[in-house]
Length: 391
Image (cartoon, rainbow, N blue to C red; front, side):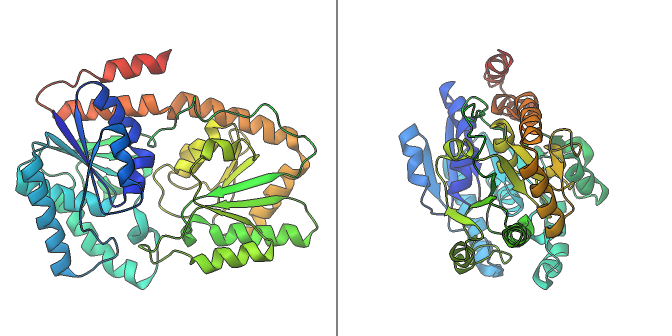
């Protein structure tokens, strides 16, 4: 049996879907990774997984170029003949579903983790694209022998209310999962050191990057010794991305310590106290929040779709801040700076929730349940994974 994963970056496949691929591979199932060229794709060979590149431009609006991409993907799928293709992100889901239909791939799973730039931004380009994207989604996502995986109930309601996907085709699986054994709380924390806060995300405006930097500026002006860290890189394929020069300027001003891309997130998270994501993006379930929660960090985020899956109630398993509100974010961080006991209590509750709801073995097991709804023969993998998660 062969299963193909298709995403708009090799980085996404390597960081978010490698665990699923390795579980499938361990049970004799061949996994094929498909994405545009990138720095991470060659790493799949270390795990015995094939990676094929596809000429996909995330930002392109050229109809001829986009038609060429679909033709290329169709030819690839005809040649490789997977039993199932799992597409990630809106654009890949639409293109992957179309190509799978043309190539007669028997089963299709479309995963949409958040509604993305087109639905998150109020910019002119996003508003123009929204009805076009909605039309394409309506004609592809839930068509044929397929399922749609979403990461939160808000997105499920949005797709069904707008009649983009029939309710019986949708499955909600909260997050892409986190390895709760690799991401562990740090027991040896210096009580007297400054509070260390981290925002780890692509440098998109809707992720609340600007509000985070402004909160750092406010605390600096008050003489607070809170350390603000920023991990992540610009996203050239997204019109809402900050530029590298912006991050470098914040770093020079001493507002944030910009770390760029971080390979070893567990080690970084063991050195910080708070994970902040003041996002107003249409998130699925942000990976940085579940990694921070698994690491026992106090989580500060917004009460918006995706983020509220991690922090369900203010003051219970984290703190919620209004979107686009740097003064409120600064005030909450000052509260945490003054009350380290609250930081520890909320971090412990976040860890409990991560283990119970976001462990990657549970997520992989639920994903394979969706595969088995569509495949002609059972995988024989899901029960073993779920048993390990219960231990």
